[in-house]
Image (cartoon, rainbow, N blue to C red; front, top):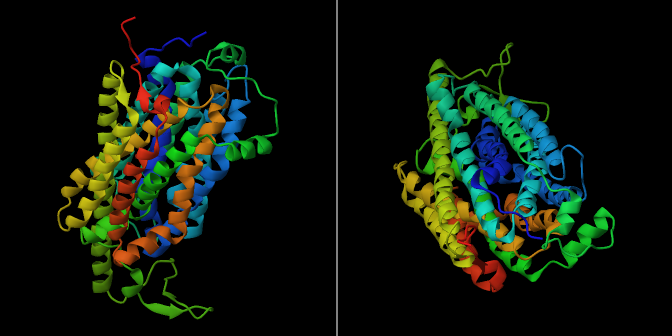
Length: 485
C-alpha cells in the first residue's frame, strides 16, 4: 500500500515547528559569539566554547533517533513526544542564556540549549519520511527548508529590531549582555514553544500498524538493545551515507566557522569596530593568583582610569554593539535567500524532475563565492548582502538535498535512527573546528579572523566537488511530487 500524497498546507503544518527550532539555532548562530565576547572571552577561545553544540548533537541525535523509532504514545504518537520535550527545555534555556554572568555559564547553557534543540529537531527529519511517499520527500524537505529560512531571517534580525523599533538599549555595562539581546531571546523562547505546538496539534501520525502496511516499511528485524542497534548501524552504514558524509563534513565545517567567528571577523574587518578590551581603560589591580584584573567599586562597577577613558570605552563598545546588530541582521539574509531558493525549488519540484547532485554542487559553489567575497569588503558593509545572499543558496540546499538523497536510500522503519547517525557527519567537523581546526587553518593564511571566512569558502568548494562521488541513481534523480495521473 502506498502512502497518500499530502497537500501543501499539510506538509507546511507538519514542518511548522522547525520555525521555532530555527529561532533557537539562528539566535545562537548570530549572537552567541557576541555573548562570549561580552563576557570576556578571547577571540581565539570562541570556537572551543562552541564545542558544546556539536557534542550535544553527536550524543543526543542517534539516541533520540532510536527512541523515536521505537516510541508510540496513544495521544502524541511517535515523533511528537520528542517535539514537545525538546521545545520545553529549549525555551527555558533560551530564557536564561542572555542572563549568564560568566563565560562558563553561557557555555553550559549552550550545551543544554543544543541538546534540547536536538531532541526536537531529529524527529522532524524522520517525520517527513514517515508521512510522505517517496515522490514527495524532496518536496517535504524543501518546504521544511522554506520554514527554516523564515526563522533564520527573522531571528537574526531580532536584536536590531528590538533596539530600533522597541527602543530597548543595545548598550550595557562591561561584562553584561544588552537588554535588546535579552528581549530577543525571550521572543525566541515564545516562538519556539508556540510553533512546536502548532505541529503537534495539526499533524496526525500513522500508527505502527499503518506504517507496517506501507510499501516502504522494510523488513521487520529482530529487536536489539539501543546501544547495540546504534553501533550496528554505524558499522553497517550504507555507502550512499558515507559519500554524502564527505560532502556534509566540508559543508558543516564551513558553516561552523561562520557561526563562531563571523561576528568578530566582520565587526573588525568590515566595520572596523572590534570589541574593546575594558582592561585597557580601567584601573588595574593584582588578585590572589597574581593576575591583573579591573578594579571594581562597592557597587561592583568597573573603575576607569578617568572620565575620558570611560567615555572612550563606551563609544567603542557602542560602535561594536551596533556593528554586531548589523552583522546579525545581515546574517539573516542567508535565511531569506535560502527561503527564496527553497520556495523556487518547491514550485519547480512539484512538477519537474531534478538532479539533486548537481543542484547541490552548484549551490555549494555559490556559497563558497559568498564567503570568499567577504575578504574584499572592508569598509563596505553593504557587500555583506551579496555574501550572505550567496551563502543562503548553499544553506537552502544543505538543509534539503542531502536528506532527500539519503531518505531515498534507507528503510522507513529505520529512518529516525539513520537520520540520527547521519548527524555524525554534521557534528564531527564542528568538533574538529571547535578544538582548534578553524583557528589553525585560518592562522596559516593570517592572524586576522576574517581568514576564517576564507577557509569556509575553500571548504565549500571541496564540498561541492565531493558531490561527484555520489553515483546512486535513486538518490540523485528526483521525480515530481505532482503528476498528471
